[in-house]
Amino acid sequence: QVQLVESGGGLVQAGGSLRLSCAASGNIVSPNVMGWYRQAPGKQRELVARSSDYSTNYGDSARGRFTISRDNIKNMVYLQMSSLEPEDTAVYYCNHFQRSTNYWGQGTQVTVSS
View 1 (spheres, one colour):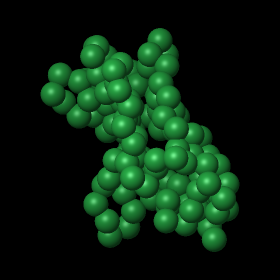
View 2: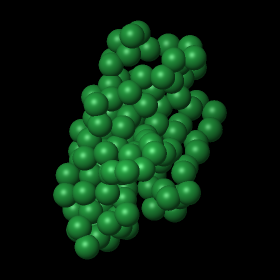
View 3: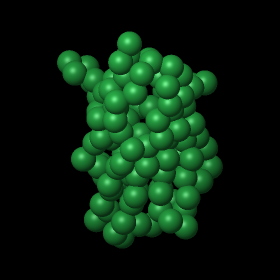
View 4: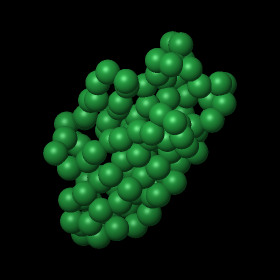
């Protein structure tokens, strides 16, 4: 089992920045993928960004504005978000994928006011 705990969400004005953090603990093995997804009210959960030891992928909404990074020693993954827009308002979920299993955090709310 892998446990994920997110932090860093909150309320920010349009054009502002936020940094999300996710701490992973438990039976973590390599290789793995860590990333961020988000879900806005009435919409499906979508990829924001994910990172493995070999590649990094961004969803269309994040490309050019968000940056994902990870610290494999601390088992942390971060999402630096800039130029935030009201459309970025959502619950952001940390995700960890290993051995064909997805693990999810409880989610952190990001609200961007116009």
